[in-house]
View 1: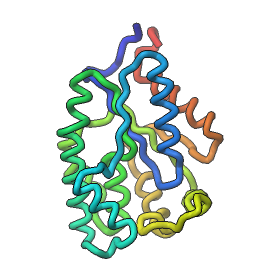
View 2: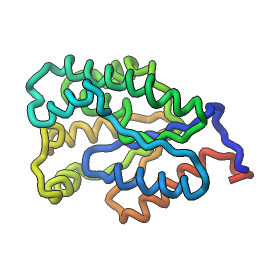
View 3: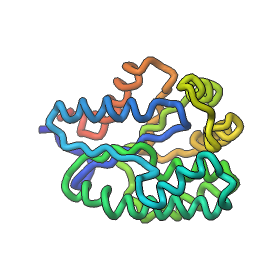
View 4: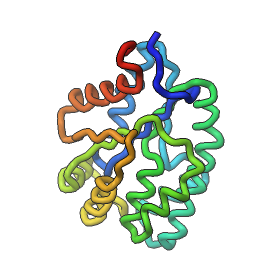
Length: 207
């Protein structure tokens, strides 16, 4: 059996990046691959389906319905519930948690909306630190093109100027557990690099 470099009972892997980078697709591929190896995997996402998460989704079409500070509070409260009710119990049970967005997205998106990204990260210190963050990167112009190709219109969080500001903030994060991967590559190539990042969580001699 491979030996983990980490001391937690479980493992938390967060997928981050601007919209249109294929996070959902890559999470599903990784989850299926891990389960095929006998791992106990929990897939989750933010915003959640809580009352806070539903309120956040309403902002997709009417972001001006609240102030940036009120918007941030919704994300914080949604994450507190997510951590308490799902993430911590799963980690304590030894499961692998794959989350589609986490507190880096809050720092980037709400930071791009005029708030201080560093302060946002500080306010999220209650949340478990990820063992690995997969940051999928892509030019904002390609992201907007991908979103539009789905047949819908860009929501309030997906406007090109906003995506550019969000992308710049994502580029400013430098924590050692953060792995950047170019999401404009073929899906299979992106997935292989994600699996390589997963393997790096284990001791080289037993990987």
